[in-house]
Image (cartoon, rainbow, N blue to C red; front, side, top):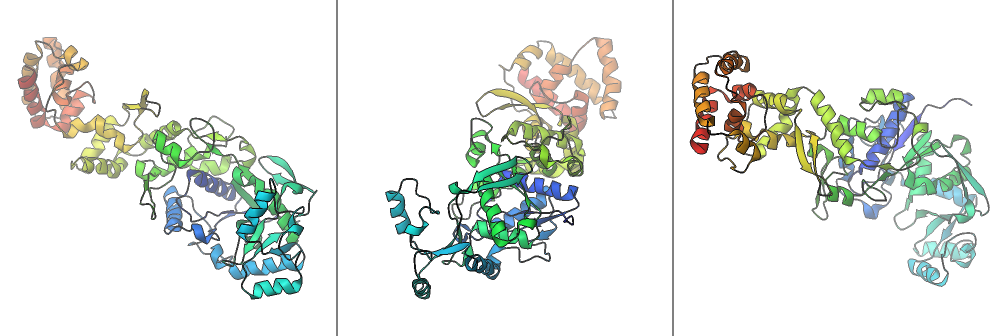
Length: 519
């Protein structure tokens, strides 16, 4: 058989923001396609018109644009297999619904929701299948005249797939191997609804995957129960020879406890579950996003790639190009992956410290603007250079005090406030101040001020060349008291670097204020 070009698809529904689990699915499709020189298709599954949310489609596209995950064809990208929105393919699906009806692979059912509810009340664990279909109101139990009359009168109906019981259906899954399910446990799924003249997910996906020449279906584990039905549909259409290979990815699990990762987990523990901030048009609720939280897209992609897949070595930091070379679907785990949001912040730190200091300026500028502070790009770049490797304290989701590296531009503010705002008071109970401001400190600071006043070159190097010999001569060690003057606490960078940033005038002003205040 001729080897087909690899073609995969990512097909979200525009029912709200894109979940981070969906981003991972799209990423794995991208890596697989690029590794095999194939195509990635972007398809919109909007057959469930009642759940459509305005703006969701645009949000999804913008998310991938930010993440750097590109598509080869599809909605907004063009291509030879369009249209790529399922709501625009009504006439295409009707042709295949008719094919299934004509070949006795499907039938028309007129049961109303009330009738189905009544049946469920009468029969425990009721399932519409080979054991019950002949007791229901459908084209298998009605004459052709009755069927035609009901349709002509405008009676709503659905088309159900006729599944024959007792057959072991095998799904060839790249990650999970041979998955076997007996057809007797499957119900006669609804494939088409006359109410909106649209197919359900099951029919639309099979038809679209076939017509768009999809060779591999890489999707979440939650779709595994649907796989046997899809195999049977491929056979019913006579497309078994072109059936794609399946790969069902492990679930993303809660960081704490059991179960699938949800928005509630993110809200509780303080991390996003959506790539971008989402404004719900119905409720007005705003949900946080990785972009707005200060994550770099390459850090998000790197973190997600390793949730359920291991490259087979100890490498953690990988570019997209490196991931493409190393990616192997068969090495994906069968088990769910715990969503380690602390590790996500660690990845962001790694990428932040690697980028040029000047690249922090836009994000850091927003942080400063929120505090009412204006700073030049040169000032912000210098502060980043001095402080980006510092450690901050934080409280985790369980209320425990912990320390971590700076992971976001917003982390800089509490560590850098003193660069832009002079101390206005000193905490007499602060351990660092109590230990390091002594009876002699005010006099030592006056002496240091005299030395600093005489320095023409106030760069860090210029200060060091004058102050270091002075400390050797006087045997004074003014560093901690000086830090109290300029910072107001036991934090900050090298004192010469800080004084150079503040400039001579501001440095001397802060020292005099501390002397006057602390005495």
